[in-house]
Length: 297
Image (cartoon, rainbow, N blue to C red):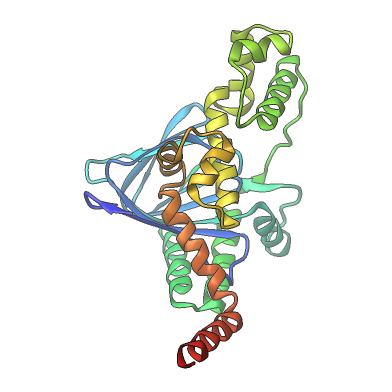
């Protein structure tokens, strides 16, 4: 991704399973309200990012980290006119839990207490992880990731509360989410959804916001992009993925995907393909030799 001084790369390194990587500079980029299945550990190196998190605006300047727990709704935009440059790692909950169990006293489901942490040392660690992944230095990338996550958990870690469905409104929101998941490509209107659940549209809207941090239509867009990512990982084309998850066409997927993931689906998929190719060097060598033999005959 490039243009107007903005650039981003979203990729994976085969030797860091369960971890996504991002290096980016954004100026006019705006991330709509969305969630991640993984943790977000974003190390700001230049400028500043402002993001909405749990009812308030948060400011993360150079030398700080933006820390988002899984399934937590948030936004993102530049906090200064020149934008912000950052590197990010997205470890899965299983990766973080494994590190926490080995290196901290945290038990249960570990997570971050504050969404912004002023810690230039860990900012440097995150960027070293990305550099090591770029250079194919598996030992360094794995080591530095574990050191970074351990440090963050010791400085800013806690046990994430277990989400309990106690109130009638919360149960309503959970049921609505289930319907939207089942009917992702053909969702009902808010009125029909509320009617089927035996409530009013505004009561459902209020309950859904309270539980998931966004209205049903925003949650559905976020869920569609998540599902599209999984389809792209399997090799399905962006056009096919768009239709499968319920977008009217690929341009709609492109727009929403970039506003949530940070790069277009085509660029995202190319990076995934590079990782998959790197994981099967023997097969690629065999294919190359076969093609070479065919060209000589």
